[in-house]
Amino acid sequence: MAISDHVDLDQFMDGVKRRNPGETEFQQAVYEVAVDIFDYIADKEIYHEAQILRRIAEPDRVVSFRVCWEDDNHNVRVQRGYRVQNNNAIGPYKGGLRFHKSVNQSILKFLAFEQTFKNSLTGLPMGGAKGGSDFNPKGKSDSEIMRFCQSFMTELYRHVGEDTDVPAGDIGVGAREIGYMFGQYKRITNRYVGVLTGKGIEWGGSLVRKEATGYGVVYFLEDMLRHAGEGLEGKVMTVSGSGNVAVHAAEKALQLGARVVTLSDSEGFIHDPDGFTREKLEWVKRHKGHRRGRISAYAEEFKGASFHEGERPWRVPCDLACPCATQNEVHADDARLLAKNGLKAMAEGANMPATNDAVKVLREAGVLFGPAKAANAGGVAVSGLEMAQNSTRIAMREDELQSLLRDIMQGIHGRCLEHAQGPDGYVDYAKGANIAGFKKVADAMLAFGIV
Image 1 (tube, rainbow, N blue to C red):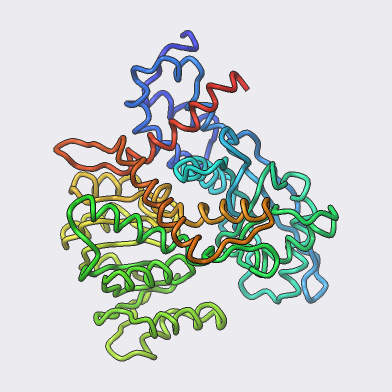
Image 2: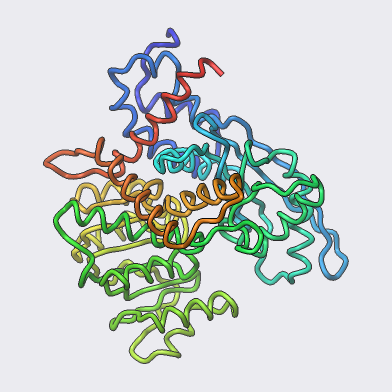
């Protein structure tokens, strides 16, 4: 078969699985994009000749390294660190660092692949990457976390830079961890540059970064509903998770008139039929943030709320749903129950929280579905703005950043709409996001030749 001959989707995925054995999360992410891209490029020979989709599905590089550190009892501990640099066709690599016991190469390759299209959709010049370690910060002292972060950056620093690769935070990596890593980078290189985003405001960080992902999810949800002739006012919303993305999605939904009735963590979910108030959400922020408590305590604090151990919130009837916890938390049966109970729209706050089968169920049921690469791009968008502020040594005002975030999310919605027309007038945002994100990266790759 000549290299320019077309292969079908099954043949393409067979190749992906053969080259990436056992990496189920990565295979799932590639399929979720390829299923829409194959139809789009069917009559576009130039993409086939240049093998663009196969090249995007092969990371530019995967760096794996040993991270040695000493715990408080003077035991030597060994973790594995990674940086997956997927594609830099439209700008420096950009994507978070995740510290969690579940981290492996498959998960980071999926996240870096997804990040490539997410960053493309923002309209900002950023490529896609992801990294992290199987280090688990839970239960560790500040000194242990500092020693680990310093050891991690001692290896990572040679692979990143303000014009090369700019990591950010993710699960298990917040302002504390970013601070320790930035301090070590500065110590090693004797340079004060924007090599990381998510920094503290006092030392180069950006206002609105903490709120950006959660707010952006709700902005995208609002745009989907508005395009369909509806709004957030009076709608019942379920949210999973209780971390940064979840609480700020709930906060913005509340500001725009929705009634948010659930949050969750790894132990189960809380249901508050009366809905969260600003005061209740502030309690959650304090409880989960400073005290690192479990969400079950909410039901003890506020009358009328109930805790459901070992369950996810998708059986609670709702108009809107925002899964903001982790990947593959919404399965096909959950999607069927949500659709049966009257779900109108779902926007993904986490990365790939709905399985491919669940997305198929939602699409077939006519539920508006905002995929993560579009809906949760607000966080990386403000990270891009933090990069710009670091480069110019000028800090933007909060009102400027809030306005830019709203404009960027509106722009993402518009780019998705250009390619989102589905059967019977259904607006297929997953298809639109995949094609719009792919086209920008693919055309840049064509311009560079075979590299």
